[in-house]
Image (cartoon, rainbow, N blue to C red; front, side, top):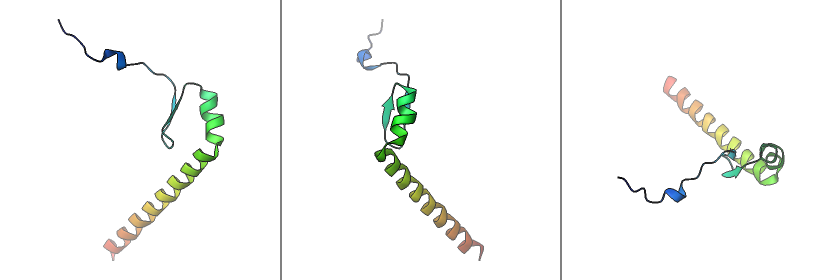
Length: 68
């Protein structure tokens, strides 16, 4: 017979998680409408998109150096 320690800490969850803000919502409308229109979410989205664009530029520049 097995004794499972800490089983009380395993909780089923159903909802919506914002990967940018690391926030979890149980209500879809709140997650998509309220949260996604908030200033903190917008600021994190803007920062992520800027970072992604810089990364793409860096990769393309590195690739063009290899080709030459």
